Image (cartoon, rainbow, N blue to C red; front, top):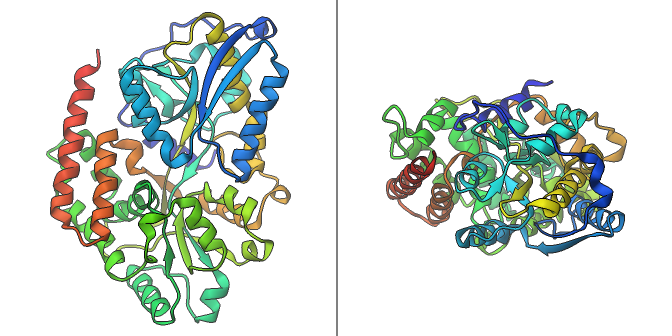
Length: 444
């Protein structure tokens, strides 16, 4: 397959211990019709975007096709989902089936015995297992066992721009940092918001902007050493502080609208779709929301590009930050008939048919499917081609510990409001190092 997807999913396993083999027996996929159980499902497909509508439809169809299985569904808004799941995990109570992210989150939950391997399910459907893009399942592995069924592919740092606004202001899409600052300045002088941002939840600035920006400054190798706290590399190093200073420049240049910290990413996407900002730096997930809520005229005005290069940066500018993203996981308490029912639901939500329907809902997937461009929006087709023409680099919250990612999210919010990069770097280093030590200490 194309090097793009192979690169991103490989990155998510750099910290995982992937040796060993499954000793689990294969699940019997033929007993589904005899399953009688009540299971709980937590998900974050609450919006009006096409992907959320598709997943809710799949859940409803599953319930109709399995009258003996009662699914107790808890829908949680995307911006609240991780927080609610973490709170539940801290009490030791986990849903039977739930949305889980690959990388650090999977490893942390596996180390705490909050989730169960799903190798039995994966091995029961060889064609499904072998249909995932290279290393996609590995992104959900811990110590050789698979803990999640991949549901998407998430490039996080696409520079969306409004072609009409750029043409009317005689601007070109910026390819260098100085060009980006020039565009921001000219748009501000013309009374136009340069970049829409919705950072209410804290993660968009980190995931969609900083992950790519920082990689252009530090390079991927430095980040992975810092994540592992190896070779004397720390988040207080000058190269990371330099990356924070570039992020601070965006705030000082007036890149974002007033009140960006008060709206979420969905509101940000709609703001961009209405033509109220010239640019938006967002993930591939925006496409399914735009396809459901933007006018055809607005969609036709959208273009997609990479973030600009950083002068003297150690990272490759021909990249996007990205990850396999989320998948369906099995909670620790699902046993017997509940486990069988949970496996059925996981397969329904992430099997080949679900992957096809997800792609056609304008959501990228980490599964081998050819895209029929007649069934998606023009901007989705453009992003699809863009993603498959570049390499992908790590998303910070996909490789940092949960505590480290939270410190980074909080720090970036503070940074954009004038905070001190050195103090913020020290807070991130302290939070990540402490959590990493606890995580490594809990592993057998």
